[in-house]
Length: 162
Image (tube, rainbow, N blue to C red; front, side, top):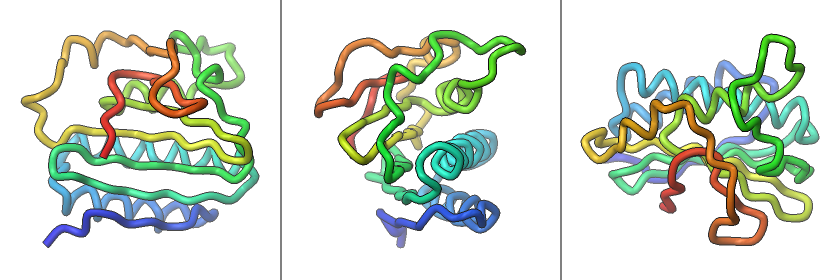
């Protein structure tokens, strides 16, 4: 039986966290390159918490059987949708590669900012037959318009609530 929700603290033991992410997502049905992509994207989000989000936070995973979501939350709240680069950063860019990479690897990425907390949601469809693959591989980052909830905006694709 699949556990539909798990949560772990973000610490400097990223290897264990990656193992936890891989195990949960694999049990939920994600496999191959898509599993690898989710682990890489979630690792990037956790690194951002350690480096820019006050050094502490949580990583929560959930699935409804169709979508798997990874919510990475910090305890500072400075990450906003405006931090996401509108296009691939150049080799001379100092910042933005991690957020850009998350958008490239996941089906959707959403940032929610409230006072004292920022949460980035990485989502992957478990059944790739439902994806608009032309949109996903177009290299497009959607940073426009607020989404449901104050301070939330999609970064890429459509946010799928679980």
